[in-house]
Length: 143
Image (cartoon, rainbow, N blue to C red; front, side, top):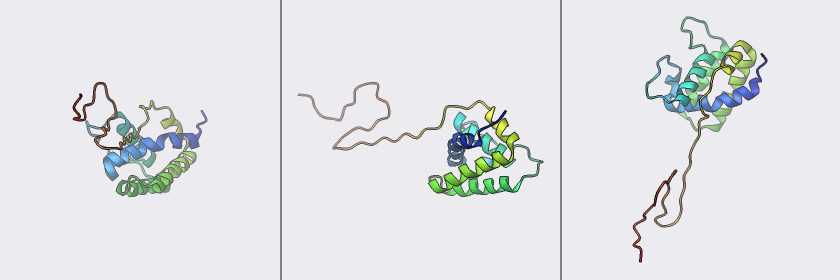
């Protein structure tokens, strides 16, 4: 099976960054919290596999160590777009160098992709909600 590592790296990066945002550098620890949602748990699993932390007795490569360093750095500034791009490139290079890792991860079932919701409002007493299934009262009295 031939894996498109460029596309796979693009697909995996949001999971990885979501896990890094949730756990920081501890994302590479083998322990998984019960509170972790499927997206974070998948991102953690991907990062552990990519960095060689999924098998505690195995030696890691320079690429894996470099990726782990980037994870630690990105944990300190999770919204850094430049570091996120570096992470994506390192994931791509690591999977190109180790096609067996790419094939392994490509075969995993993925949860729904992580999303970011931004809600904004403007105007005096304008409500801001993500979902509304009823009436919103702003305190104005009906005449």
